[in-house]
Length: 244
Image (tube, rainbow, N blue to C red; front, side, top):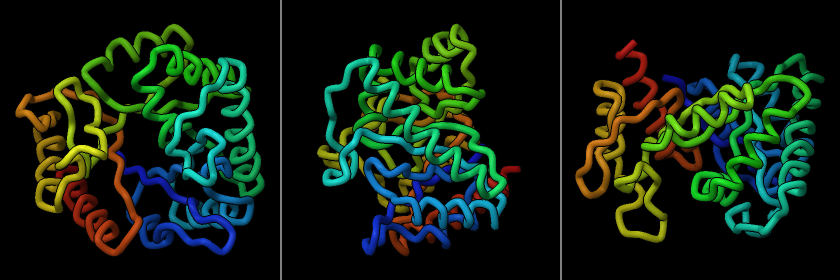
C-alpha cells in the first residue's frame, strides 16, 4: 500500500502545509495545479522536492476556486470540466518534464473529488478527461463499496485506477467519507492508527455505525498540514514498513 499526500498548496506569500517534512515519508505527491492553490513557482519547488526524494508525481486539479480553496462546487458542462482538467494536468505535466519527471496519475481535489464520487455523470466526465489525455496516466479515486462498478467503467475506457482510503476520516456505511460537518468525521490520533492497522491487517475499515467494509485499496491518503500531521505520517509509514 502506497502513501499519498496533497502538496504544493501554498500560493504567493501564503504558506500551506509542511511539504518538505511530508515528502520524505510518502510515495505519491498530489501537487496542486493553480486552480485551488499553488502557483508556478510553488509547483516547480514541489516537483523539485519530489525528485529529491524519489516520490511519484500526481496532478491535483480542482474547480477554479482560489478563494474557496476548491471546496465549493461549480456547475460545469461536460466540455468545460474536461477542458479544465486537461489544462491543469498538462501544466503540471509540462513542468514535471522540465525537471526530468514523469506525471503518473491524476487525483481531483476537494469539491471536485467529492462531486466525482457522488455524481455518476461527473465521474464519467473525469474518467473521460483522464482517459483522453495524450498519454496514459492513472486516475485516483476513493475506494468504496462500489469499487467494482468504478473499475468496470474505467476498464471500458482503457483507464487504470488507483483506489485510495483515508487514514484520518470516518466512513459511512456505503464506504463514502462522512461529511466534515458531522461530529466524529475526523478521527483522533489513536482512532486513525487503529483504522490504518485494520486496513493493513484485514483489508477492511469499520464505518462510524459499526459496519465492516471490504475495500480495494492501493494508496492511503495522509495529511501534512501541521506538526501533528507530520508525526502521524511517521507513525503510519512505520506501520506500513513493518507490514512489508
